[in-house]
Length: 391
Image (cartoon, helix red, strand yellow):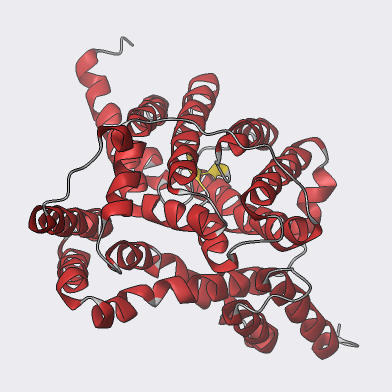
């Protein structure tokens, strides 16, 4: 059967939509997370550029090689974790070191299956409760933002609410459009010029350093949330559409991509989860054998977005108070709701999950190690005590 240009238009468009929704829904979370762990505005823009390029190339390689609509994304839960963790011992270079260690751990899951099995042994309720606790402060940003800057944040929240009802897939992207309009109006009112240099993509390399606090409090939780909230669900979503994603090659490609992007500020890339359905479902193409084109199109679109990464970073830099954090919080509502539901779904796991959630949400760091790590420790200890002697 000959594949014509007309027959390819549908999966190509599906790939563009996948990238557009994925990028506009979460780039603010990525920039917020990188800035929180010590990146300057230039380093955060470089990190956004790095993840766009690495996940774009990873999409193209995996989709082309395996003829499946495999899509790769940045770790949105991982970026939220960075935002909740804040500056670690050693600052930005130590955070970059943590990104490199995360890449090594992802590669090890491909080369040493036992590591993947060890992660799988962490009860899903505990892992999801940790993620929910990490996401909570970010999800509060739209609420606190309405108080801090009502004229800037209310239009963003109202846009999101209206389109959450009319076109849920586009609610967050259109909320970002509203935020961009707020920023533009603010710049016009102030008469502030925008430097051309801020709009050009660039790479700022950082020599990594390694500290115990960053490795235990950042690298390990980043690895866990990336695996539990992105890679494992991503495999399951693809399987639901009839595609068996090759685990080892996928982990090798995303692990290498994370390693390559880390010195430039990229935190982690992984298999897409929620957005994976946009390229793998029948909406992308009625013929499952042609949907791989959507994966390639997604990757190519991410490369294009990478060219505009500095402009998006500049938009965040120039935004009025609370506007961009509100967009980031809205983007995480779905992930937060899903994490809470999975955390407390099993009544027998509810108390350990609640303890995990509260410790993670507290943001308390002990011995230079972030709350996310101590949340896992506390939840597992409580679970062990409560389940001791049970079969």
